[in-house]
Each structure stands twice: as structure tokens, then as C-alpha cells.
Amino acid sequence: MLDHSGVFGDFLKELREQGDMQAPLMSQAGIGNELASFDGEPIYNDLQLLNRWLDLQKKEGDARTATFFNLIPLHDGNRFVGGKKTADYQPRAQQLFDQLNTFLDELQKSGRKVMVVIVPEHGAALAGDKMQMSGLRDIPSLNITHTPVGIKLVGMQAPHQGSPVDIKTPSSYLALSELVSRLVDGKVFTAPSVDWQVLTQNLPQTAVISEE
Image (cartoon, rainbow, N blue to C red; front, side, top):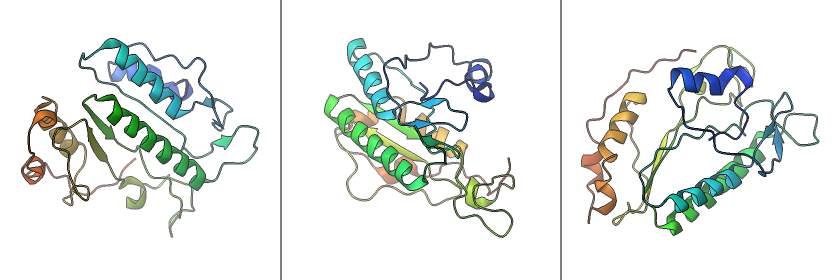
């Protein structure tokens, strides 16, 4: 799934060649767009796309699937349709978070058991620093490369209560993949109780590094 064509930078081509993702791209036909990228390409409405995906999943039954979704409404240079300047970050971020929250609520209502993993590519360099002005990412400072990652488990018999579990140790893709591997058998969804401390302990640590 993409909310764009995947043509820029040969993104879709590289996914197929380097990521070995050969599944057909979910249709974007009939999906609206309020945003356009810097080159005028439409950025399709993420909530509409996610709802289409959910409708397709309901039709396919309970078969286990994995879905990759790349979305770009927060990319630098995006503008609202009809506008000539870059759209402000705050309303774009608010709209995206609202759409994601709405979708997660619909996902919960569907009764499906789903692990949602959200991984930002990089920060937006909104503030800038002494080395480079805001919006530039030529120098991969920690403020840009250190981004939050989230995992949401939907449809659990014993969902987590209280504040989210926060992994405070230096973590990157190894910790994320290890945590996914602990969850992928699906047993956590039907367990009468979950020891979240045990589930998240001893994850691989990655020393802090920033690079392009």
C-alpha cells in the first residue's frame, strides 16, 4: 500500500527488487487527495486507503496477512491542493494522527487481531540547529535520526492498561524485529494475561549513531 504512486526515486521499483515485495499494489482508484507533493503528484487520503484495506480484509476472512504501507503526508514540500507554498506541518500532522486514531478505533471494532507497527523514516528537522537550518537534513544530526517507533496490538483478550510501555534502552531495528518475532505467533492476543515486562525485557541494544 502507498498513498502515492511510488515513482519518485524509484521507490516502488526498489521495494520490489530489494525488498522482494511482489504483491500487487492496492488500488488507489476513487481515493481523494487534499495534499500534493512538491512535484504535483497527488498524496491520497490515508484514512480512505486504510478503510479500503480493512474492507478487503473482512472479505478475505481470517487468513493471516502482512501489509506494508508507506505514507508521506508529512514529507517536506507537500502542499494543499490549489496552494503554492508548503503546507504547515502542524495541520498535516494533526490530520494524520486523527486519521490513524480513527482507523485504530475501526480496527478495534472489527474484532480482528492485528499488530500495527509504525516506523518513521526520519525526523522533519522542524527547528534546525547550529549546523543547518530548519528543513535541511544533509547533516544527519541526532535530532533528525532519533525518532519514536510504536507498536499497537489490537484485538487482545487482555489489552495493556495504563500508560504505554516505554523502551528506554538504546534501540533500533534489531530490538524492533526481536519484539515482532516474540509477538508474531499470535499467542499474545488470546492470553488471559500478559507480563509486559517479560515480553519487552532483554531486547537487543544498538549504540547511538547518526548517518545518512
